[in-house]
Length: 297
Image (cartoon, rainbow, N blue to C red; front, top):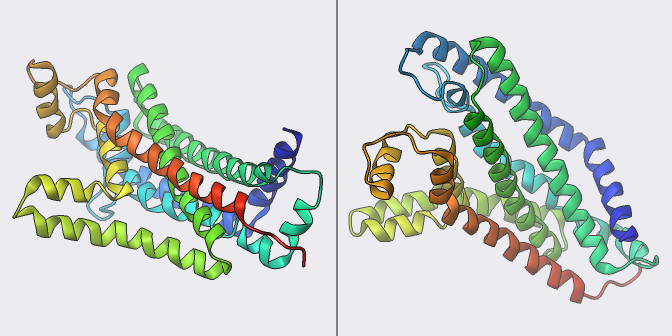
């Protein structure tokens, strides 16, 4: 356990001192502040007495000039941050010879990869939690409408889901970092797979939509981004028209925004898929790392 924590604290310090992480953090903060500012302006001009979940609209509303919401920006930046935290986790130290020197110490091999992954996960969690809290505080000051208890719980659930989504991309990049000796190869493989899942899988699903809608839906859910989008839509837009249809299906009652418990129930299959994909990628990297021969240089 002491070896695990030693690796964890060392990797955590490296992440927060990394120029790459600082630049990515600044980009996310600036994008988040810009989207929240536009969203708050539109919300203040569109609030009526019947408007529900006003505070959650900060994260989903876009503007006329800025057509992207905070949720959209976050769905793009999370994979980039996850890949940046994991693509050189093992191969950079293997190439430099630091890995063989580390393993020559009285340190279990699994402590190394577990500590590295845990440090990346905590770094990701701190970044996502801080940006959501920051934009929530700014939004509260701008629109002057405090969140309800259910809205706060939905935001907490949204943060947890976002961390799981980022953990998938980090575990995938760690997997490539273990399998590929070159850092550039691991980074390109991670980015190429992200682009394929982001752009080409939805196109394939749309092509097949005319032939069989169920098959098209199943193909689109291969993409973790689609799974993440479906979960966040259920959590942050409970008054969406699609949620009304789901409410009728599950409850048989008149269309009303779903309560949080039913939203989580509906989102559970997609969430478990994300967790399973994350565990599968990390298990592959763990097994490969534990079995490979690492020679001193």
